[in-house]
Length: 463
Image (cartoon, rainbow, N blue to C red; front, side, top):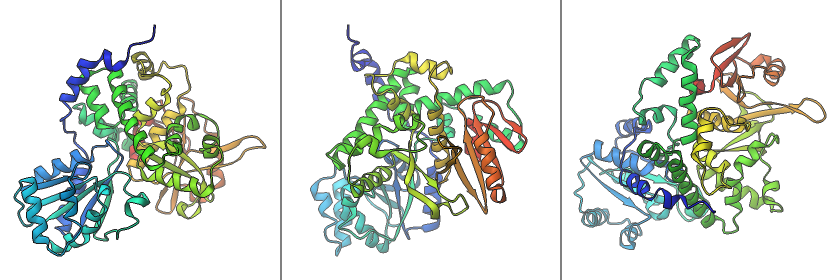
């Protein structure tokens, strides 16, 4: 008998946690908004980019409520034609502001109010108007956008220079622990890292805590589902809903389905020993220019992270990156796990429990590689890797290269306690003149192996 639909099984719980979805999570980008407000004092707008459902709208509305006397939030997904038409002509700003106050029933106060343009890519003229609204100086302006850099949303407008851009990523590990009511773990882990001390008996529990983060991920809706239900099937249901939103977005941008396919095949490509994503193997015959456009759209969507091959590892890796050789990761590892089991209608609790308890028989190296890429990118690092021939049929590979001042910090990733690091050793011999520190990131406790620091995966954010 066919399994009943998960929506039928959990309908009462689904309704309950949807009712409670107003939970507000603490986000680090809030402090960045405070800094912008204090330093700029109305001299620039700020644009928060990020994938759909990552929490942009919730964050900016919380900030507006807390830090201003009043605010107007214009959601351009829902705004009427009457609202959008206000930005067709900016000659009479007094009229625009009066109309907005009347339409939204809000009194704006000079230098004490903020206007939020939510999903601003849906109204390009509003984004273009930022230049003149900032110059007017009466109010602050915050924009949010998904797929904001796609050409068709900006090709007919002037992008305002009076606009700072920041990215909201999925919740990082510390934000995830905050959501669970734990503010002690990450500072304690950082202390152990800085002192170079192993956790000993505590390590096993900390790894289990971290695997929970890998499975749930950092999308607020999935985190909320876990807190409300403590049920992995419900978490998986929430994540599948987010992925379907992405699929719809990709279909709107590319009706051929190729953009969606590039995204959905990320786990398959990472699980293979290709050293890179092979788009032609995924899409078949596709024009080179069209492929570049699709890849750019995928990168701009903020749903993914690209790691490029460095042809000449050095501190200026952006200058020598190979645009034809790259890996693609999911911006959220929780979504990555769900994508890996997309062939099922839903991912059963038993699979999540095996993953959580490290009892899953399949090699999960690609899951760990994805979460490390996510943590490094969230910490502000651009992602690069390096491969070179070992023999006629095999390559050496360094999974990540970090640039620190005039030196490199190479990283090799292992999904187990396996402590050999041949690729790392050979790389450090080859480029000894620019190597400062070297790391093996794995699932065991902190340890030093001659010049290599063996680091548990949960300490990655401290690098």
